Image (cartoon, rainbow, N blue to C red; front, side):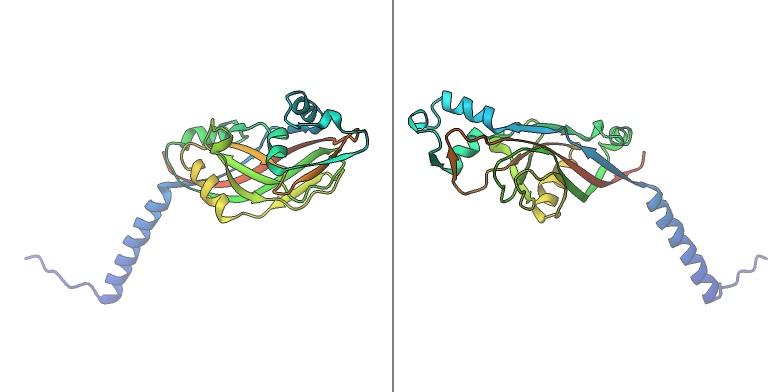
Length: 223
C-alpha cells in the first residue's frame, strides 16, 4: 500500500516560491539588454558660401543694390531655406556596438534614450544663436518629414564645446519609437529659430561644424 501525506504549509509555500523564481528566472533569461552609443558625422554649415548662392539665385531681392555696411532684415523662413543643414541618415549598425544591433534588431521590444549630446566642433559665427533645434525623421526622410525633438542651449558667437540636451517626451516618441523599428533614423538641426535677422553687406557670417552623440539602452528578446 502506498501512503501519501499532505505537504506541510511551509513546505508547500517553499515549493511554490521556488517554482515562481524559476519561472521569473527563465523570463529574464529570455531578454537581453545592451547599450549603444553613436556619433553622427560632423555637419558643416558655411553661411557665407550658402548666402552667396542664395543671392545668385535671387532669394534675397535687392541685396545687390544694398550699399556696403548697410543691413537688411531677412525673415526666418527665408533664412531657414538659405541656411538649411543637410539631412543625415543614421544606422546604429554603424556604431561600435553594431554587431549587437545587427543581431537583435528584429527582436527589439523597447529603446530608452539615456543621453544626447550636441558637440560644436568649430564655430566662426559672427552672431549669437539663441538655440539650436534638433530634428529627426524616418531613415531617408526629406525636410518636410522631420520632427522637432529638443532645443539646445544658446550658442554664443565663437563658442565651441559639448552641450547635454534634455531628453524630452518628443525625443522619446520621435526617436526611441523609430529606433524600435529598425534602429535607423534621419537627423538634422536648425540654427535659425523663429526670428528675423539683420544681414549686413560686406560682413562675414562665418561657419559652424557640429555633431550629435546619442546613447540608448536596448531591450530585446534573446536569440
